[in-house]
Length: 149
View (cartoon, rainbow, N blue to C red):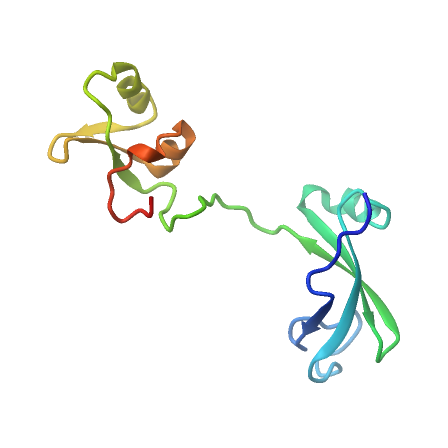
């Protein structure tokens, strides 16, 4: 697997966003233009030592070149936090929502109960977390108007 092209070819970095190692604040003035010559995926040549150090947190390694200072910088991108995200919605995974299940769908009703859902008599619908709806593949049964489905 070879280098992955950078998008864009030239990264514009403000002083606060990138200060070379050993540089003191204020040493880098204004905008610095660095060409990204290579973006490497974990496991390719040039990344193996960093992959050992950072493991699955390593996203990529970039080689950046500063033509004004005649320097090459090796930078890395790391995953520092991971949270659940469901595309196309602003709902939180633990928000309880209403879904429709037919009277004769006893097996599905039991599955909903096993996953923390319950019958809501006033709404005449089942109440369960959005996370469980997605896990069970029941998105098309959602009744809530505020969800973009």
